[in-house]
Length: 397
Ligand code: IVH
Image (cartoon, rainbow, N blue to C red):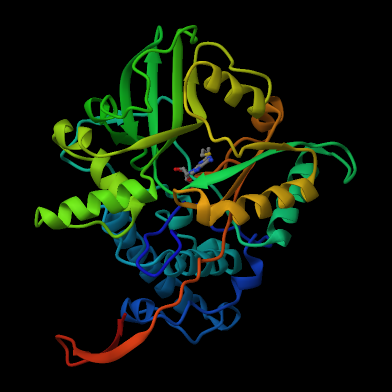
């Protein structure tokens, strides 16, 4: 879910609309899983179109997909060491959603479509979120975004030309964190975990310079939600220090941020250059505003860091303009983003739309396509696996 060859996955969404309906990633719905060595290794059927599956095959594949995605979620969320690439993960999710859309009655009670992240790790005390921390539905192209706009209009009984504003902001590739302020004082910080229960990382969050210990003029109870991340420059510096110390290096800034925040010793977190952007909220004793835009402005006025690229868009064309504008700045931002998040601006309308099991109906993550880079192929090694299987491995410059 993070662009690039050595990348981690980023952002989880339900991967599709309700069963039986056109899913947002519908153009890939009937497609096979990406032909990567990784997905063939985990036993995915690369040949069979979803339309050709028998119910028995569907049951078996849904079970394999659930197991594969659970293992990938554990590696990514609990161990901060991704086992498969973002693209592979998204392909598994799209395939799972496509099979569920064709066979809604075969959807598993533990379907990956209904899941957020992974259970909290045993090393930390657990925190039950007062309001669940959800994931986002993914979109991969303009047609998916148009579907989103149409679905919301239909739900709200609005015609195609009636005004309907959205915010558009970068999707930060880090890990989400919920900060609880009581009477202006930071009292608790928790990771998302499985959305219901996260890890208590309060002592670690207190070491992050971007996270205020006190907020003046805040509502009596304020839960701020946002993303902890690491800049490219800080990531390079950290990896250089790790190499010099003979310690493990991190695959990408997202893993470095997650591995740094999820430390049992806060002194280690304190030595890591973490940053934070606030983009949402949980429990509140008083509303922050009438719109998403006002609420985020309110958080910024309280002293929380918010992303300067957030815009309010009056209609679909402006949302897509802002997507392109943010994408154009992606390489020079100095931190990883992997898409643009759209949120319905009016909070009363958000409340009417509500949530699916794992994602809000009023928000959408429009993912960027993977970033491209060139390198030179130096050689191809043939590795022999335990079972005698031969795998070609590229040696790159
Ligand atoms: S809003 C109820 N806004 O993406 C929805 N999430 O794939 C709350 N993320 O769990 C999330 N940037 O960790 C939101 N600008 C942004 C975001 C963002 C990154 C992450 C977040 C979330 C995940 C979902």
